[in-house]
Length: 126
Image 1 (cartoon, helix red, strand yellow):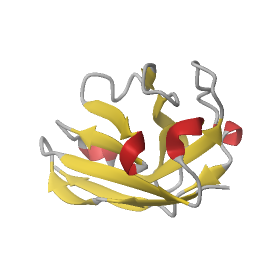
Image 2: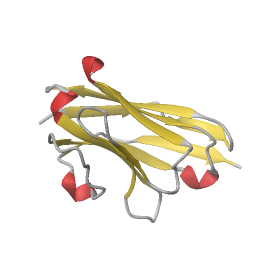
Image 3: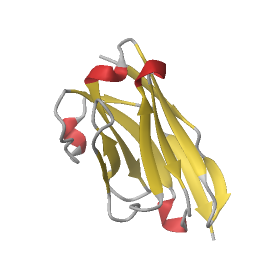
Image 4: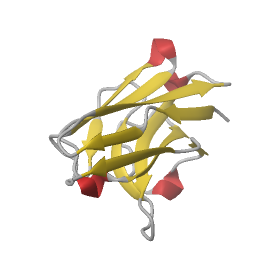
């Protein structure tokens, strides 16, 4: 299995930006579909965004569409999440996830993913 390390979280004011990274080790990311999920206190883990193995297909939750951008650099074995126009409701622990697959379509279900990062805290104040 691939090992994932997510980073880049922090505290910002509403309207600000943050960029998260997910670095992989142990395996090359080029054969993995990837995703970002988040979990706020008292809530279930929810889908944020996904990107297929080649980067040709992306998907976003309605709550972040137009504000967040997912991308990947397979040569660097890294995935990214650029978060702009942040809102207090974006506050959560963000997790990157990977699923070994060459399918173009990526499931939004967390159970579909095999490997997870340790999580990075994002806090947005009003």
